[in-house]
Length: 462
Image (cartoon, rainbow, N blue to C red; front, side, top):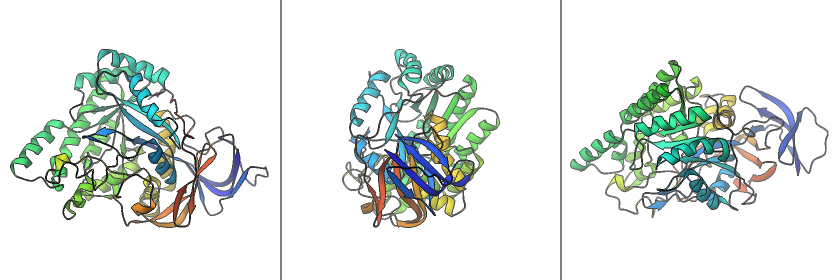
């Protein structure tokens, strides 16, 4: 199978230029002007961008949580991803009690078998850090192809500082990366008890119960341990200006601390929790939405390079039947999470590039090139000869109003319902196979579940 994309503006993380791209057998083989070669399919990309497919390195597909499951499985979730211009994702494999890392990976990969529409990898999340599990980190990095590991500083399955030190040292030795959900559980517990005594249990108080200082303190503590061990550290879903200030402080001291944020922390704020009735439950996620001041600080962090990655934390639960499954009288009973994988690229283009908050090249770095480098996806992330032909022909002028009924995520609402975006995928290719295409009034999936494959990632070196 071959495809020739002609006359588009190829966008890289450092610049843009007009050229043609030829892909054969899943790889980009030639880039040049006025290519005169034959191909099974020829695409006229005049007036369009040719982007590397976006990579979402933070998703939770069919994840068990709070007595239910995230509703997108590997088929519906990767179909939605493809329709949004995401051509690779890294999902979290949450270790179960008694499991080895290998057993957990095998369990999650079995769920993906025959279903994934795009390529994927996995981050092991360590929740049962027995000595043999810590020792297995070396194999996970060097043999399994999963060099990044998530730990939680919050929830019942959190790890303590001693475990974090052991993991940081193991990853430093072998070329891995520790990812941290950074919130202080004791501050949150104190606030939960205080709000319960005061009868403040509406969805709005979810945000009040997890104040900015809970993130700020945890980021600082994790960063100090990374400094102590000389290791690399990655803060997932950074949400507050205070947390960002700590990232910048430690980066200025030479600590290898990296951070991601998500569209919800750039575009939505805590006022959403005040929607009438139970409406605020749609935005119950952890960490919660913050202030407009934090929104603006995070945009600045993207531009300064203190935040290197944009991801979604895609973890959808229906508003009707899931968010309210344990009642509507206590924010602590609301399953945490929201959908986002299908709107990642359009939102960043429309709200970032079009509104001149970031450059087009910065968008590509945040969504593809920088993410591929961060996580060892050596064949992904750029329109370059030898890379996988993961490509998006993107119409920068196409208008689309985000409407749940026109999206593919398996959930009954969208946090951005009614927002008009400028710029949408026209064609999406995964390793040279066309998997999504704009038709009539939305992007349609035209690929094949099972096309996607597991990506073994390479070790990471600072």
